[in-house]
Length: 171
Ligand code: FEO
Image: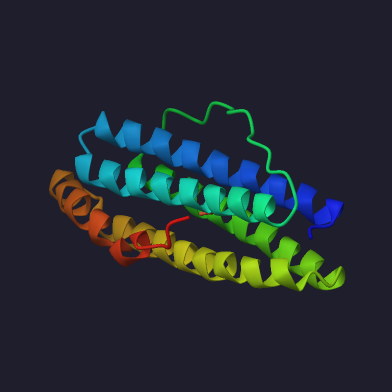
């Protein structure tokens, strides 16, 4: 059974995952309308993954005698200066989510909620993967985005990065 404190904190995490889903969807749409169809598919995939992260939380809360709350949608940023900016914002967002997950893990130990501690381990690993993924993409962009040919190459190669992480458990 979830404590009220953990239920509230996990519901707050639903809001963060939902915001990430919406931001990646917005980035996908921006890429698609700025001649970057490959990177658009990368961000559509990231958006789907964030939705799955959110749904995992919804199901866990509801199955642990809590009540999951579906948050309102705040419009995400819709225009970006460059491909690099989309990835830098993504990495900053992932780092913020990692910090929030770590705080949840801390809380679970403090209140001796070992079920939630166990549940949250999946998110700890996932955050590690996502931070590494965006770091790799940013390094690639810094190396190759100097001209049109480089952008063409990046648009083809970025969707291949982290493809295996798409095979996450369905909720
Ligand atoms: Fe689910 Fe990328 O935070």
